[in-house]
Image 1 (tube, rainbow, N blue to C red):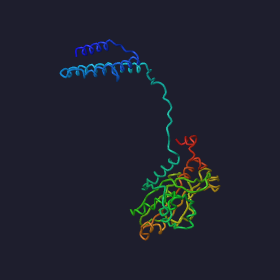
Image 2: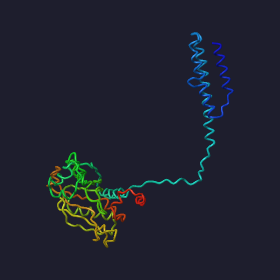
Image 3: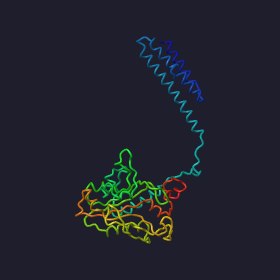
Image 4: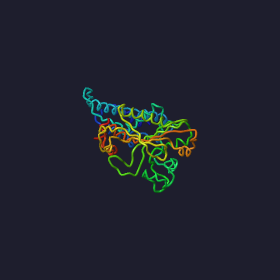
Length: 340
């Protein structure tokens, strides 16, 4: 016991006299004294040779030495770390900052947000639905039974493993889901991406975005529809925009119409976007067909309503004077940086 105590005192004096200046010296100290085969471990292995009546005192003395050796190591390590920090030059706060590019919303999203805000001002709320839809919600409930010729108006992407499922061709399927809930009156818009198997060109794409709207209540008329859409167009394109309605056909509305606005890109003089007519169709609309109301559990004798649907890409092209729809999905940063 006396021999071990003297050895501990000698090692303690040696540690007090040591001066460590480099990282290698500090690491050598750690290995020699505190490593798995270091002097502290060797002393602890001697515990088995100490008599039981002295083991408690020797253990306390050995533990004190271990803490002393560890504290010295931590002090040297902290001093070395602090010296490294001191050697580093301080940041010059007067220098200009490094440029940091910020992102921006896609022009399609910017246009969609603006459209949503306009309709929100007159009480329309937003509802979204699934992009993979079943045949009933996408077609049958909307007065398009199987083999109906109007189905050919929308070239559809069917899911081959189950032909009853498809990529929705319009967000009207969300209208069906809302009407089926039976919570009347309904005053909602339905933004989202849709898919059609069309040839990609300057005016058409196989996927695009729509915003559809639906208003169902008692005594809703076509005049209500026209005033709602007049308000939207004036807010979206300005008070000077010219508007015209043309009779049309949609299986889910009766009567039906298409709405055109004067072409901003060519100032109504004629271009490829307006097909050299000076007019651009921006939406289809009409009074909700009684069959659609009945299919969704709504009494057509008591309730009536109107609906419309418009492409966001086409409206975006009108807003920013874009002549080719394809640039909106090519992710070319040279193009997108214009819309920050």
